[in-house]
Amino acid sequence: MKTVVITLPDFFDGEAERIVRFLHQGNVDIIHLRKPSSTLEELEALIRQIPESYYGCLVLHDHHSLAEKYNLFGVHLNGRNPQPPKGWKGSVSRSCHSLKEVEVWKSRCNYVSLSPIFDSISKKGYMSSFTQEQLDEARIRGIIDDKVYALGGVTFEKFKVLEQLGFGGAMILGDAWK
Image (tube, rainbow, N blue to C red; front, side, top):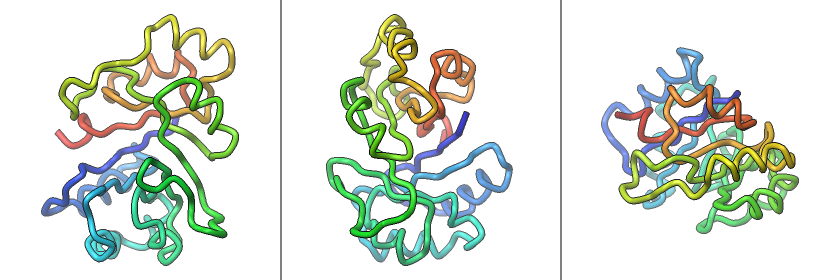
């Protein structure tokens, strides 16, 4: 199962070093740089603080042109950025909030996130949208598979449960940065 860490929305001192530590330790496969309020220059400054040898593990939620410029692993589609850059050849992922969205987008992307699977750690009041029965049924029907990554309330301790549910990856935000 792939492990993805999503950055906090705001920049902080030592962030690049923390990103490198996650990747260097080998327990994180991909880092999603999610900075919805950032300028292109701010995001580029963060990327430039990360050694080039880790660029193949970085995915951008915003300012997708930087993914092309620095030959990063991928771009993540969302409401702010619903299309990849024209001619983009790297990985494409997308946020999904329903099983129907997963069915529509999974074949068009390298992977998709489905959320919220559990009650959120980082977003207060953001509660799970799925019952255990719904997730089991989605696995049996092949909706949840190795191209679907769980997001929302995911902790390192919940990996075994996510594997049993058939998820191909886990996307962690709150638990990774606490």
